[in-house]
Image 1 (cartoon, rainbow, N blue to C red):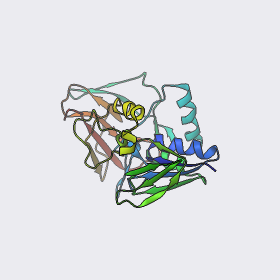
Image 2 (cartoon, rainbow, N blue to C red):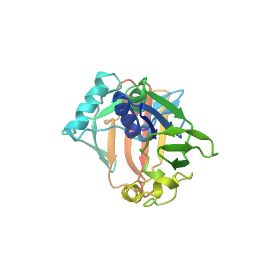
Image 3 (cartoon, one colour):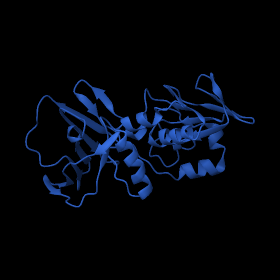
Image 4 (cartoon, rainbow, N blue to C red):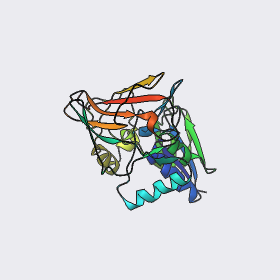
Length: 250
């Protein structure tokens, strides 16, 4: 049986792991965080769950739409039937032609968690792959040098494992795996992926905050705030929870 190591338990890594497991391979998924999520990470609090990563997703291709249908059928995602639009100078404009938007249920991280729930997948959390030797297979190690296992194939869903080029500032931790950085085709492709950090304010209230005419809004003409979302308006949520995303420039 082919053994595959997948680095990263976000949607990309989790979906790759799931497809490989469904094809009969033995998959081990390594994730530096405490659980799955990546860009669909959620924060658990006494007031409820905040989606402080991606707020929603809207399929733009038929292939992705079919994949989302699988998630909805499995109960891992649902359509967010909210009031969406733009906010400028305190005035909200409703987007009546907004495409369908979907979210994980009961939180965004439910999607990768669902994908990784397969008998052919073993998840190892709190572990960052920091060393790799190739000799008719990959032998992986963590930051302390401890061996993590030997695998026939290695998949990286985190471009920061190959290159941190293009970032406004280096990551807080060393993410680059030198052995991947030494592969020109992989490192070259990874360096072309643009990304930026984001600050997200999570606000939880004991009661309703009043009559607000939107559930999510892109903020125009502001140097600090780019997006506001009432997370508690999403399916499977409760309470009065909001997330406020800062602009990349801020």
